[in-house]
Image 1 (cartoon, rainbow, N blue to C red):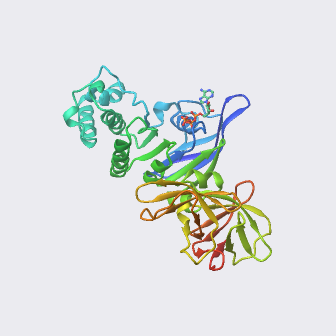
Image 2: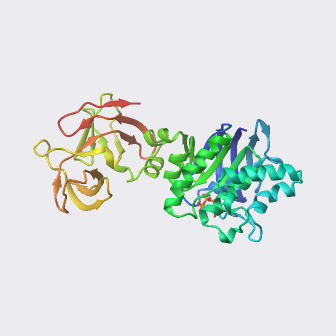
Image 3: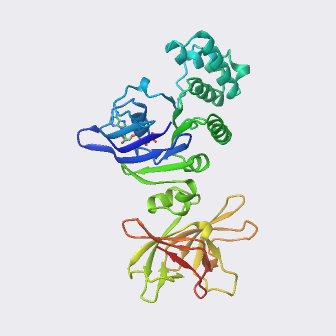
Length: 369
Ligand SMILES: Nc1ncnc2c1ncn2[C@@H]1O[C@H](COP(=O)(O)OP(=O)(O)OP(=O)(O)O)[C@@H](O)[C@H]1O
């Protein structure tokens, strides 16, 4: 079942818009993540789709039919909450069967559906237990089984994994994604966790400041961020955002120390340039002038994260090989070896300079409009 959001808006009070102009098409069978910082309106949007709160403006369509004012029970959606919302006094089986009984399904059908759903989430040996005798991950599986048993084709999930410990959360991401694909479910999944969205979703909607910032595949969002918000929200360690200037001789100068050649003419102006820490590299000794001083050294396991300061005082972060030794105060020569994103002062992306190893004297970049 596909879902269409047409210019949806929500104001809880007369003049305070929590969401404005939210437009998106959610394909049948896709995993669609809604991601953004706390308070950006993710849960509000999900509740509007579920019919739990009224839509202030715009139109919602479910499966090609207008559903803006349809009661929740007629929307053929199920919802999984962060809190699981299980009945503590009912067994796993009865929790899973509850909605079907309430909707007066025939007993035989209830039994078949419940058995199948419990099997799918691997809870057969726990089916007679009550929620309090289960682990957090098992409780979450009960909530999932309940959604699966309802046979709805669309499942709305609001931070369903956020109460689980880090290891279980990673395991459940894969389980959930596999189950979604196996069942061909359309999932709309709210999370504030960019990694969760990146690893699970087919498409991601990024919300911030009451508006959609970007919708795209995880790769689009990572490789072609629309603005500085999206650029710095996705990716760990965070993208460096540096002051930059385009000079008349087609050179982009970052923080007075790093330079990128621009093959295309670009308006002479001040910009902000985004470069991921993994796209900065250390020029071998003797091949470049020292331009950055190490401030802190953090071992991340497979990488070292260096916080450094360019010679004009601009802070940058870059990753380095963990086999090399760095100390606070060391001077390094830093070059660019990856994409650079050029944003205007409003934070909107203007163009991108792709790949290519560059430091002060060598350059072979290609600018894309
Ligand atoms: N019932 C309500 N009445 C008035 N304002 C509300 C109500 N529910 C939410 N809000 C406000 O709407 C905004 C969006 O809240 P919402 O819960 O949708 O954000 P969220 O992105 O899901 O945040 P979080 O990740 O913290 O759950 C917030 O500023 C919140 O205070």
